[in-house]
Image (cartoon, rainbow, N blue to C red):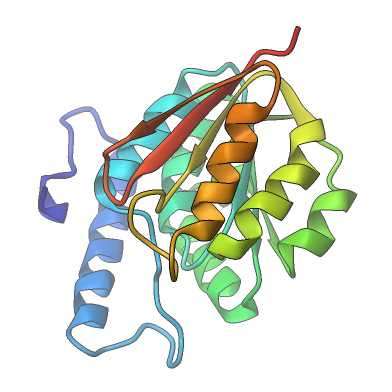
Amino acid sequence: MRTDQIMTSGMDPAMQRALDGYHARIAAERDGTPVIEGHRHMAVGPETGRLVNLLARALPAPRILELGTSFGYSTLWLADAACATGGHVTTLELEPAKSAHAAEQLREAGLAEHVTFLVGDALQLLPGLAGPFDFVLVDHWKDLYLPSFELFQPKLAPGAILAADNMIRGGKDGTGQAAYAAAVRATPGMSSVLLPIGTGVEVSRYLPG
């Protein structure tokens, strides 16, 4: 699917402009023009963005956790869902320059008030987050998928939805994704399915007890 096909008649014009801007910058980056020298978008694809938006919108006032802000493309989709439902996004990013760029894009889209941007190592930040979380998007370094899950799993609300990107393609050898999937599927109360959307999305629902 082409990025210029990601539009619906009911989409907010500011959201559409923000998406168009991201798609243009991502295309320019592929042609050799980086947004910030030395950094890449590493964003979920448009279909995955739409998927996480729909999943998050299905929850009432969801407390959303995003691991891997990057330049804010997926954050935009999540913030749009939070705005529509009265929810809030907490997003974690290791690189300060990326987080700053993402925050500026969300301000321009009029969605910054729905997002808390945190900068640092996810494994160091997660223990300090209170939770509970109703939706989690996992899209950072693949070798961190499993240790991150071990840290945020106790903070999941009943009925929480998880979405992990790059589960079919992405990362060096797929071992990080495989370890995450095995751990999620072995967790009592968790049901999970791998969807062939984009580079593969593991979608899981947590219903303990």
